Image 1 (tube, helix red, strand yellow):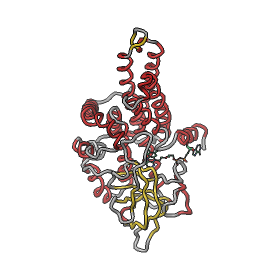
Image 2: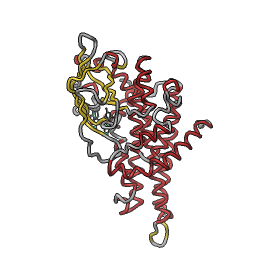
Image 3: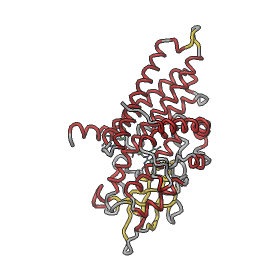
Image 4: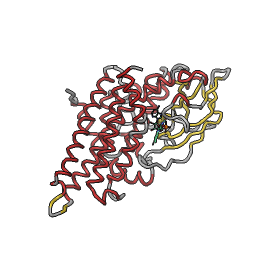
Length: 377
Ligand SMILES: Cc1cc2nc3c(=O)[nH]c(=O)nc-3n(C[C@H](O)[C@H](O)[C@H](O)COP(=O)(O)OP(=O)(O)OC[C@H]3O[C@@H](n4cnc5c(N)ncnc54)[C@H](O)[C@@H]3O)c2cc1C
């Protein structure tokens, strides 16, 4: 039986109000025009950029439950802004969990101060098969590294101040030859490509990165050499819980719009919500949202207790991302022809939902993780 504490309820209400005032009103515009940079000082001022980081680094000292409350509430106003924060935390958490004391003291206060972080694993020829990345960080005699290669589909690129980049330090060693590096946006040799013209989540920045002989000091390698794959996969476990939180928020946002519409729209002399065919769609939506929420808070509690959550996070993302696609599809159906128009929000929600089945591990890859735990590898 999961119950929020008084403090968690207070934070939920604060973020709910912030979302209604500052985030939801921007979502449609960001879909047209891209990320709104004015949000960064607002999120910073509200203490949301680093709500889960320890207070000694300027964070809010929250646990996983609190950080997912934030993502979930923000997603009720904008899936894009929730994804922005998810990617920012995914990157910053690698420093939190695997950085040295010096790295934490250097970078974590910047997270709290409104500097944006991004997570760079995928390359144009290596997404699901992450161990096949080709970017190489070659160790120099003085201990520094020279990074060459590139990345694709990096959320927050073009916005981020710091990129956490996975690159091969031993190209012959497969996934045991990958290390993680901090690359600042002004590093000499870093080129950030144009914003991708995406189907959905258009309020986030997504670009290619290219690395041309970027010199990285030894102090900016995060975690031991060769442990980067494990560090990235562990970070993705946490981020998959956030995808569940985004799915839940997005489903609730879409359902709310569809309920309002179904009460107002009449056909054959009755509001369409009075037809069982429409009402039953809401029943299915409510059940999917409830089940998603139970999985979110259960997985958060496990993480806060220090348990491994790879399988539970994969299960949560697998189901909730599919349900988000189904719920937003049903919400369009309830809107009839209007649902197919950009004038109505549900059309945007449907496009946003699809990303949840692809980013941070496709549903097929998640099924491999889950089935591996059931039948053994
Ligand atoms: C909007 C957006 C934002 C993103 N943000 C980031 C980010 O911030 N950082 C980052 O590093 N990456 C990011 N990504 C990349 C994302 O994680 C990858 O797109 C995803 O992991 C899939 O990789 P891929 O595109 O190379 O597809 P592929 O790996 O080529 O897969 C293609 C299809 O084949 C299936 N498939 C592949 N291998 C198998 C297998 N063994 N068994 C069964 N099916 C298989 C996949 O499930 C998929 O359906 C983002 C992507 C998008 C679209």
